[in-house]
Image (cartoon, rainbow, N blue to C red; front, side, top):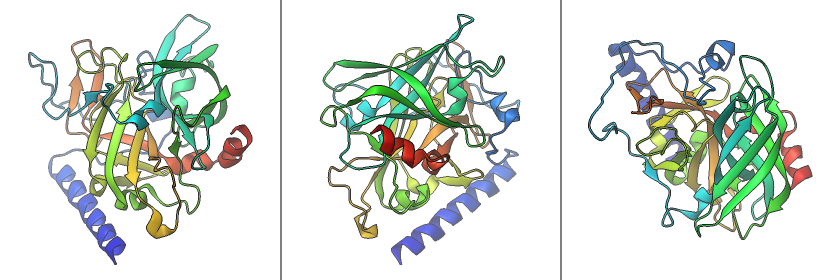
Length: 319
């Protein structure tokens, strides 16, 4: 009964959002991941996608931080599960370097992992069609230590803009607990959100003010599951700020799925999706003092998309 009531509330929330968007002349989220959208991704900074409106609000205050931007920097006091979110750096034959975000992830609770989830547009040059000559993943742990891994692409899907990456040796579970892809019942992100007490969006945004030009992990917590919006190609939208470089970043749920008889003995967090970019549902398009662009509404490719092309088999084979 609770779940049915939650679903009704979610539908009403989406309806109200769509109605308001229409009244404000904002377009509803455009979530089909095709060439027209990927073309709008600025891979020089791996920026969030462009917006259809040309009159979105810009605010350039002394602080350079938009009032709706609630991100904070990761510190030693931040939640330890954020250790699973690292910075991805790609180098290309033409000398270009780009950056994104990728997440240590697994499908089995309690298992050490060497598989990363990210977005496909991060790991190729759209203009030339080239793959990177090298990809490196780095995460700074809560204890101050740093882990760096050389990674390769294991699976990519253009339609849903997802990619699975791997590295040679699994990181011990005691060092980093991977974020979980819910593989037992394949609940939708909104269903998992129903059981969540908190939702967090995390990534290496390239703004100068909080993201320090993409060198510091930033995150927003306290996001509400009722604001999740379902889209095409198993995508989800939510109102939270991000900038270029956060692409591939994780939407994370602190969920208790025991009511669905899903076991999670170590209390690992669930990944709901990875960041594609800014949504056309955004009411604010914002520019950092270093020129990086961001928005107050973002689009994530659902975690379900990582099971395409035998994704679960890749996890089981590698982990």
